[in-house]
Image (cartoon, rainbow, N blue to C red; front, top):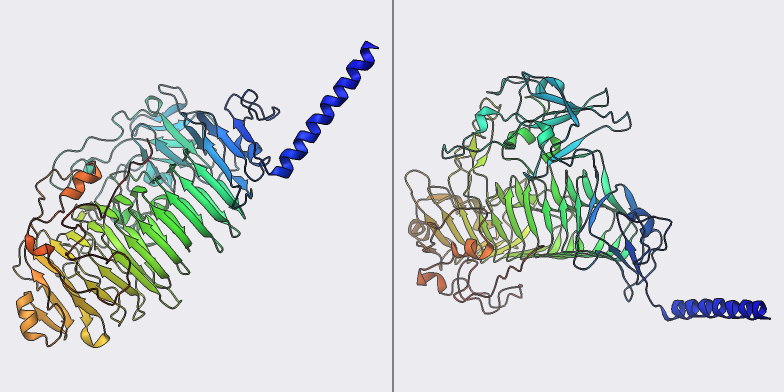
Length: 623
């Protein structure tokens, strides 16, 4: 009788559990699941019985579920994510509260230091190779110096990795540019960490400490990766990815097949070549409070990456990079940090109804933001572009243009960047130390962009390699939808401000502030207004026969650029450098009456910073 009673009780409990499950499913209640580096995919996924891999966990989730990754490193890559939540019940992937998880596309073998993973094969060159053989399934390798936070060069040829020629360049003669790796046909990874002796001074001639300080790879923590991507989002939707780190793959997120309604928040992405690749009608994303880092080392020159095939030694494609690239439809990209990359954002043809706001761009070696001509209703505002080669660039497109609102940005590209190695085939244009353009262009002839450029602060200096390049947006072909109003154009020395735009094209310029620290031989404007050349704003007004710049000012805005020029400064300290002290700046320039542009309400000043603070607020990024 006791046994029968026990069996009946057991059946009742099972029936009640099944009923509870059905009620939960009918009510749409979500589940919380857990993953741990010490777990097992045979477990239940509970807090006390966690799964081990992210790939397994993502195959189990349903709308409303939350995946919690316990702190630690998950060595996983090439995970296909097709999880679909709903608007009311998104799926969340996050670090367990109070902990930090890393999804790493690299291998674990070289992470501890000291180690014995590397064998010296040439003492004179300090060339090492991995003890381990990685087989024939890989066709590339990437590597990072973890403690120095930089990516190494990926050498294509042994001749360059093993060269004792450190420059100057001589066309196709092998040359060693600096610390790097190579995956060879024998399956070994070869590594050499010797610094190029020609790169041990900065633009002012001050010594630079080599990176790494110890050239024995066994004494360095190194992340080695063969991964193409970490997540491939394939039709994923209503997904929240937050409080996670992703590292060491050629691309972090490869987004396909209409993945939509994604939130990426408070994440770090250490990407090899691309952080997020957007393909095929990707829409409705919010990317915020995250950090994107390509880890470009200081010994990489612009022409190392931009070489033309057959002209000089190999280029290094890992640094022809973008943090986010593709068509952005209904995107909100805000309060992120983009650093140590070649390009940061490529806003490609088809982007619509997108906002890029309150981001920081630091040490960008080429263009911070590339805007295709075939985009519409895109707002780029309150961003800080600091120590970059270029600022906001104009990209070619076959699609018709739409309105683009560029306002209240600070663009400072006055810090010298490594342009071209001595002897490079474009040395006239790319000297060793170079300055780029605040508004670069990319061919495209007479096609127009509908830029409204207003209330920005631009700080630059003379570009010795492109002596006649301008500070302003001359790469945007003149048209009736091109406005340049109430900006501050400040050049530390002598540089042309505006060129190649005429009133007959319909463009409108007014209320801008111009300042040049020196003005010895270059005009202020050239081929401008009526096609003339003018040395001052006064000359332009008197002789141009246009209505342009009737409310413009040629005055010193009173910036305090004597504060330390340190890229590590916090945003408030950087911003303080560009706060005008000349009261003339806080006067009404060109009127915005009748213009329903974003960011113009109550604006009665020139440049990015108002008389009272509050327009640009940078909140803390990830801890």
